Amino acid sequence: MKGVAIGHFNISNLEGLHAIYRAAKKLNVPVIIGVSEGEEEFVGRAEAVALVKAIREQDNYPIFLNADHHTSAESVQAAIDAGFDAVIIDGAKMPFDENVKITKECVEYARQSGREVLVEGELGYIGSGSNIKDTIPEGAGILTRPEEAKKFVEMTGVDLLAPSVGSIHGLIKSGKPHIDAALVSEIRQYAGVPLVLHGGSGLREEDFTNAIKAGVAIIHINTEIRLAYDEALKKSLAENPSETTPYKILQPAVDAVEEVVENRLKLFNMRS
Ligand code: G3H
Ligand code: ZN
Image (cartoon, rainbow, N blue to C red; front, top):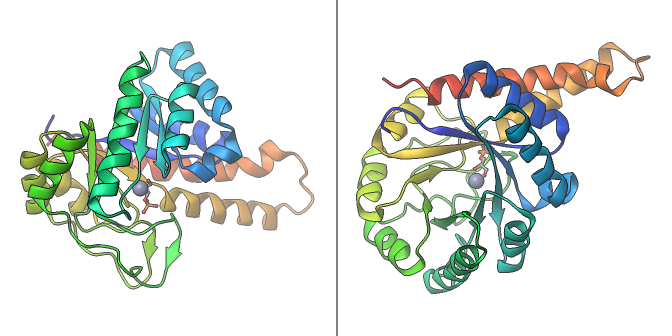
């Protein structure tokens, strides 16, 4: 639907999940929880599945789990086997043919799993890592060509496509480039599948709204919530040096993440 995108937010722990779920529930909007390979290893693959499933079933809530930026067919297959709702095979750094090959392999595995698992492919490298960067990393940010997007979708059979349309993973100190909304719209037409915008942290509000109007269906945010967690936790520890109860120390970090997520979800669900 035009005017609305689903928010995708990464977690590293249970606090992150609580914060994101609380924000989504407050606004009554669907939400996707993401774990990268590193986040998945820290949280636990089966644990991540169980936690998200528990919320979905207990509250009958549209919350889903995505294996974010998985870089090998093996790690994608492990996520599918474990019960993830969606997976991303990230071949963005590979030459086109290799990217097609590995993505196709993952799509086939998902289709044979007997479950409905969405597979997202990536075309166009937008840098790696949800962290603070001085400048745009070398080799990142070359925009995806619509004809290539069409070819990629046709050859792989992906359900979702993450193109390079101006954003970069992480917060760039020297300033983030704009989203090329006209390109988003063109790629959406050529690709014929819903588009996913990665590298959402630090983008201007109008970049989000223009991208959504142009055909972006899912938006990924990670660095902004990592930063909010980190700053609130450091403050909490500094202000309460004698506090030893983890849930008291961590509550401000949960609140900070919830606020960031709520603000982003409001923007993604404006329907105008
Ligand atoms: O897959 C994760 C996202 O694309 C996050 O990007 O850290 O720039 O918000 P971000
Ligand atoms: Zn991403």
